[in-house]
Length: 473
Image (cartoon, rainbow, N blue to C red; front, side):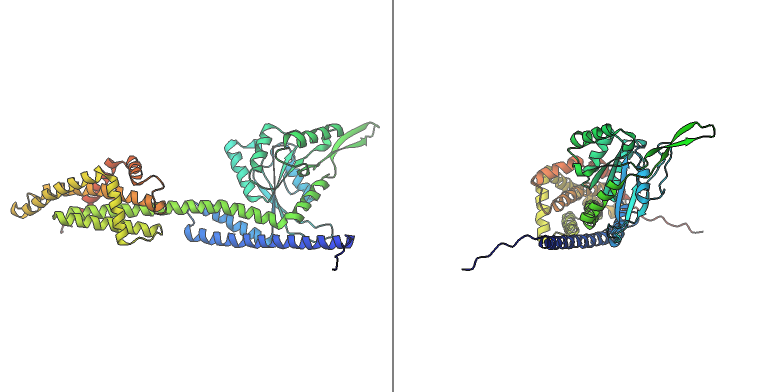
């Protein structure tokens, strides 16, 4: 029997093994990246087919298009966030190596979101994907509602968030940091302006941040100390030999932040973009589903209303009692079948009749009262209709009044049945565990039957009114 001997873990072998693991990790990131692109393309096509330019989804569609462009070009978005006077713009300028973002001695120079491209290379000189740096106004420049909206917008756009502080955290900073952290985005807490503190104080503040303030939100590796625009004393001697000391802006001390950003991008660059895209896609997908449900409900209500009006007119124009009942049932069954198609639920004519019977029984006394009223009014209407020719048209006025009343009552009943059927189909051809009687009671409690009756009477009168004659000249 041959025994296997352990292979010595030489540096070369470990290096090769790490290279294989890195390749597998990169391959996995590539697969995730391509999957994100495919998902966004499908979602964008679905949104565009469902919603027009004026729909509530127009903004989301535009953002989806931007997100797809971002995926195609591999652009990483890094957003900076913080209170006024924390040096956000100076920090971004230091990363860029040039004064792109406005800064000044007066706090609150940045009034709106601004962005610039940052081209960086890795230590071996290989050019990386472009990075878009996004500057935002100070948190304390906007009120609560605007601040929350800004936080959501930043969280949607950014693949990596830099939250800038200049000392110990305030309550507002902690609340904003917590809100952004809840968006599940990678984040670095940047302790800026460390040059303004003695070394002992600087380390004490850092320890306070690390061990107390943000311990539940960030790891120690996610906290970086920098000086984006350090003040350096400059000694000058005037003509009289007097020494003057002025403070000037020195070279940025941001190397730890650069290294940390490059580490994150090297480890998770494509995965960051893919994750952000999928999080946003999930939000848009929920909005799309809600929008589709709204459109479907509007279309269902239109179908129900048309069915109620059609039933009312059929009854108003029909003087024969038996035909009243037959035409009513046919229209109600047709409405139910149209609703089933709208909700993508297969239902035969027999199934529609069974559902109509179930709803009618659940409506109980209402359906019986409706039936009795219709039966009595149908008989009266039939008598007046037959008397109209004999009375020289005198019975026609009472006939129309009775017909409109009977038709309106039937229309209310039909509308109620339609709403109950809509609820049944919206629950996937079920009653949602409540039962038909409970659903009927809930819908009846929501319906303004007097308003509905008045609306139906007006609709019937307008349909029955003869067209105005044109006067001959």
